Amino acid sequence: MKLEGIKAVTFDVGGTLINPWPSVGDIYSEVAAEFGVDARPEFINVGFKEAWKSLHNFDYTQKRWFEIVRQSFREQGAELPDEFFPAVYQRFADPEVWIVFGDVLHTLDELAARDLKLGIISNWDERLIPLLEALGLRKYFEGVFVSCNTGFTKPSPVIFEHALRWLKTEPAHALHIGDSEKEDLLGARACGMQSLLLRRGRTVDSEEQIGTLKSVSSMLA
Image (cartoon, rainbow, N blue to C red; front, side, top):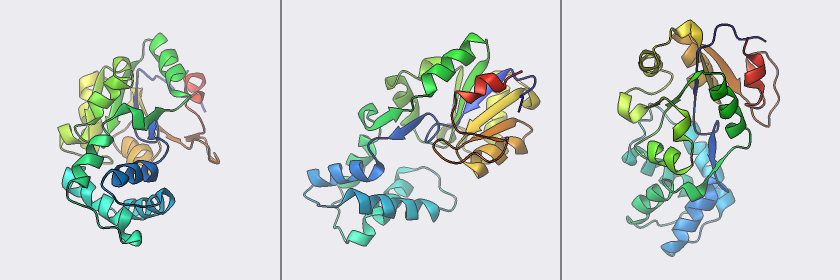
């Protein structure tokens, strides 16, 4: 598949550029232990995935994040003190609990060398931009468009349109890449952008999917 006329490339963040390390469950468990709560990471991970799947109109506020945390621990019947929630929220602002995927920097360097405009379009909160700075990623992007600042979450076309206006790029000449079919692939296409679904480590079975970000540069005409 060749991508024609691309002048700007935007990226999702979580699951696309970075990921919690070693896992959400490990981080929750570690913070819980600081408050005398013993909980097994593998069970927390299961609870977290179930909680995430049950989300409806998630707005990325602290209140809604705390609901996710409670649901993640529910099966273990753990009693979590009130002080735990702001502590675990703050822990995810720490760059030490995140990894940058191995295909990211190479890809960003290649795209920047082609004089393409680069941007972020992410459903996140106020922790994202400082986190990108700390991880050495912010410098690559002309604009970082976060749902907490725009007031709209993907797949709403509004957040994509806001990014396109800032990047001064017509939708047909912009490419968005992310790991969510609904939020990234279809959300971007709904406003006229080209888009790719990243399935890192999973089966790629159509031309609109890629298994690594390293594929992007070779797909650009």
